[in-house]
Image (cartoon, rainbow, N blue to C red):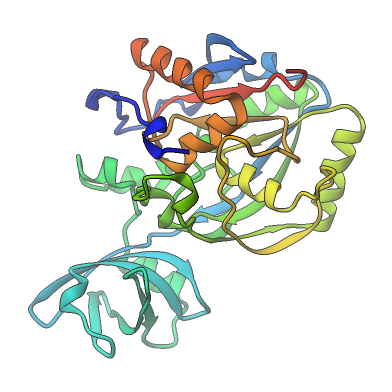
Length: 345
């Protein structure tokens, strides 16, 4: 499909720079088949059924944004994907001033060697010393806010908690699974009381999620890879939900992409551990999920393509036009949408 089919105009003031407080006070646009309903995140239990299951991503965002120097050159690095214990793939600002074999000093006793330049222009950085890289990042790094927020304000201490979900447990993401930012213990208790189950998986979200689609046609776009895991017992419980007539609702596109990567053709979810570069566009047949809770996405992005595949492009164009007209807040710190496709249709 033509990429420009997924374009739309978004007023700059619709981009949220801070999250709703409390988190579950955010608005939620429900797209139920072709019906569009204004609601709130706190209304979520009323839109689900006893026996349904919400699936969360338990990745934890690390302070993966680094600023440093190589001689008199200022170098910025955003870690993207872990290679091994000491090496990370990184997108580097001012990369032309950094040659392979040179070392960047990020301050606070943290430095890294530019070990290899990859075909996409990113670099492999090997951190110097014996301290765990996570310790080094806590000392020298900042939270890697999306460019559409970081370009409008400085990162601050509030972001250390605001850009982390209540499920965050496993270090490795450089972007938050933002749909889950709306959840609170209060909301989770209400869901439990309503008979809705919860499960977790792990997908370490990479900075590639923010890369623009440069191709003119979706068939020419190369999707970034991210590492994920679904445990065997988690897969078994999710299959039992389906067998009992419940729905699997992914919380966030990261959860959805991993579930679909782990699903067999008959919809059975199996244990999974490894990279996924699944690229979901209209025409894709969903196997593992029955719905999605997600934030509002960028024009021409792979994530808007994904929600259009789930609900239909015309439906999502109408939903986004409705959201813009009614002042919903967009992107990572913005409001939510609950997408429930009409499976009969």
